Image (cartoon, rainbow, N blue to C red; front, side, top):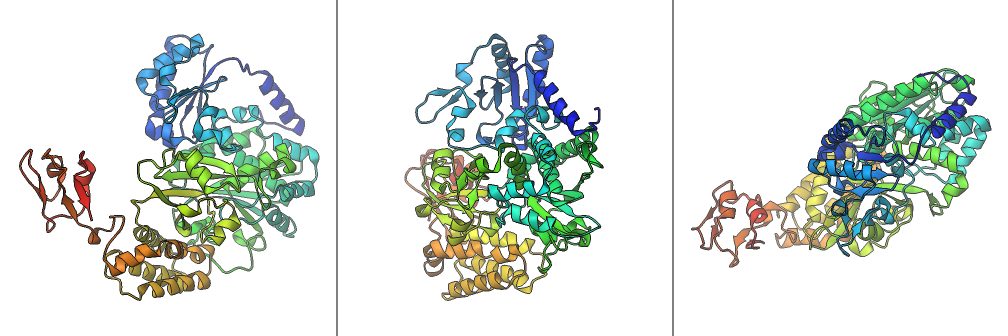
Length: 616
């Protein structure tokens, strides 16, 4: 790879790459993010390569291996460009037919996506119900880019925003654009990005400044940052380059979870390619601007998502939060001024500079501009990554994009913001998704996790699960966080077993408020949200557990009892599945459950085909 020496070299390279591409040549695109690979994408890739080589089609058909396209429910999927044809849940046996059809310009109708309502076959990716109601500015790049090929990124307008920044020449102009765009941090707090950059730019420090990308995505059910890093790592690098130019930062750090091996692999390759090309390092493209980025692997502690704890971890110390002020922009990593943004925030920067702040600010609502990526998981038909304008309602995401409940059971609530977020009941699904509305409802935006729950979910058990997670992940520096989260868990655990005293709800609420008001860092201050939100909206379930020793959802083991009803025809499936031999009965005769032996594992109910197992 020849190193670029000047700004003009980068501009000419972009022109040469675009001229050299023939858009008419069909391309087989395989989504090979972590979810795609887990579903069998690697086997499809090998099959495509074999077909292209054996049939001498390498000159007529291209192959592009990309990151996640967002629609996890249809993986492994195959996209055919430029027509935009998508084949969902493709098996190895179908690949030979698909390659033959691509070569002949045909569409395989039997392999197309079938709309579950109309039963019509849908040909184009953009016409799938999952995508039609989205505004995909960040995720749409994933299907266009091979993440380990920098020239593929440049072909799709990559580094054009950085080039525009250098050619414009004004650092104040960049900050003004970010402020005009209205971009707020996508990591949870929603602090205005332009204001943070301006504060960093105004710091006078002769020893340098730091920019940090927080990719320590620790929320259960959240994988937005992972997918962006896997599918488009150069967008993060370009965003940080623009940020460094605007603020005068000299050093960059990408702090990524060690549990993200594919994201780390692609990021390492992208950093090396950017350095080899000359867009990272000393005197970039012949200018006096120097900036380099290194990657730091996180140790997996949830608390390291908090910015002051993250800085400690980067320094090689225990990840513990510290008091603020001084704020990171005043005194951060190794005492130097530091600005921290998360992956999605950095990925938005090239979009804003390339398309203009005014155009970007028109998306979303006043004070909440742009799009937000959510990982939509749980009891919903269409699981995956959803990118929508800020201000869209929860109902639109769950029903129009998510397709509604995955089964016959009604949707009960949505958990937003991860373990530190809150539960919003179905009756409030008209609530717009923005920072302020979610905060008023007792939840937070967080990094973008969205877990959909149906009537089979016990809200007491859910609060117990999150408090168990939070007490284990507390760094322990604050007494109220260390002991408060532990005691909240213990109270909820007693309630789930039906042994909570009558007055425990008042104690639980008082304790939750104390933890929220007295802990030091943002994670401790939001740790009470799962408790307070479930008490606010689902207090009747707590009362049922306490006063009637009953779990309405049939989840809390100590409060439920399994029995067999008259629907039983003696098929023996439940008897064979029981690990404790608690079920007796002869073939073709009604069976019985011995509740003294029953461990309430639910195996019998999961295998029963005749709705013969009652849970009370």
